[in-house]
Image 1: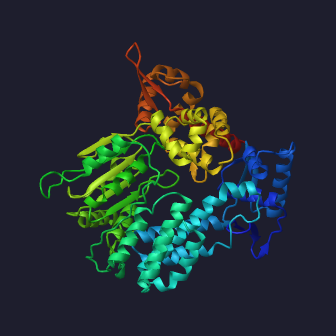
Image 2 (image 1 turned 90 degrees about the vertical axis):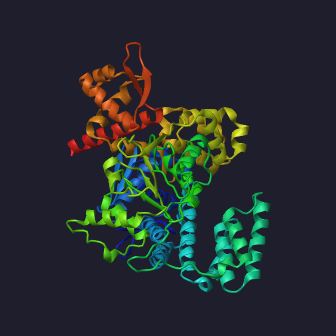
Image 3 (image 1 turned 90 degrees about the horizontal axis):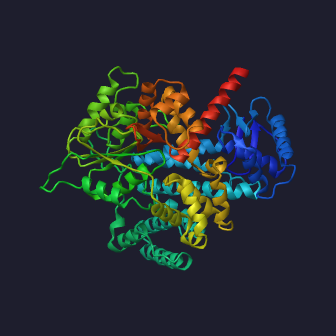
Length: 609
């Protein structure tokens, strides 16, 4: 079975195109596929089918569309009712948007690792999956919700593919394409800078300068802003002649030294965290004595969604000038929260540092990990690198990834409060205060939305409870729906039963992120958290938790302390008897209730089956 969303929504069974009729049926299929196996609620389906004016018979109509799809798609697709909605799974099916995202990730990784030929080819294959505007035959409500994100992803892929082409000297080939893209996206500065680069390298300096001046006028007229640093730097490079030399791919010799830049871009609308930012930058600065470097191993800890990675990226880019030998980056968990294999992480870092794949031990070699660690320590020794290790699971995972000398600095983010990393300094990132939260909301949603509805903004801030991920999701929803009052979102967020559903937009899903953090914990911790999230109100002691869960007080206290270490519970002080009191962050509590209910429902279905 093959499903296509990057164009008109279609389903194919081999060479046979399945005849789907009407935008509503196409919309239901697209929504279920975009959910990637998650349950889509009746309310969500209704919103994307009819907007905010559903018919009185909406449930019956949704049932009809589902039945029609089930009949058309056949037994190879599992389309079932799961409260509070429907779920589609199709083992082995090819979904073009999933393949596009896979190729896009691989292409960007190749670009980070300076494998420019691979990057250009892989990103080109990703773009070839698009057959026109995505979701071309669905309702306007679904198109409004999903199309901006998909178009932004496609344009970003184009920019990365063109970046690889420019490094490979293909400036003449991409000039006409870039000219059309700049006309289509006149305020997109990166495309304009790429067009200037390609024109200059084709000997068309005057045209390159004209592209800059036209862009400056468009930005001032449409957005009221000046060109950003990247576009301005390209302009200065044209004037000074610095664009005449092509960047070269890395040498392939076994002893080549490259200066990789693997860190993703910093968040453009980063707001707040001034104190933590200043402290981290100060500790990453070189020691006062000439040529001296102190041990710089910095840990940023805090609950899921609190902005650890965003802060780390902001710091890494701010301090990049102190690390001329490169900026390394590795995520230490997979998307589902499982821990990545250390050998896999080391291979990626070594490739970025110039190591050839054929020089590294085969995956089945008995001493492969020891060989990779030796190579990594050799490559990083004595080099002024900044190494960002994101979402570490524990100290043992970090052992293989720490450089052997003090010349390199290490910045680690983790939900766990790691204590056994030698020479480390920990910065604990707490949820934002109300003023910082309001500033972040205004930065993303637009200050005008906040000024005209201050009461609604306050309700939204309280509902997000200082969690930047939640504030970002709420702000994006406001920005994407300028015709809707903020008070409507505030009312829905004020209802705990609706809150997590409203804090989900595009790839941002607060409930999924917090639920994944809980799902990564051992069974005993998950069970106790589930019992307390449903039963406990406010704060509680270990004795009270033990009574709710039927455990001994010692066992309950041990599990509670582990949940605190994993940033799933907070310490709420000491009571009159000297006993610690614990509490949930409200969004963690709601996510725990949802995650626990989902596990219970799955067990019942398994038992019934």
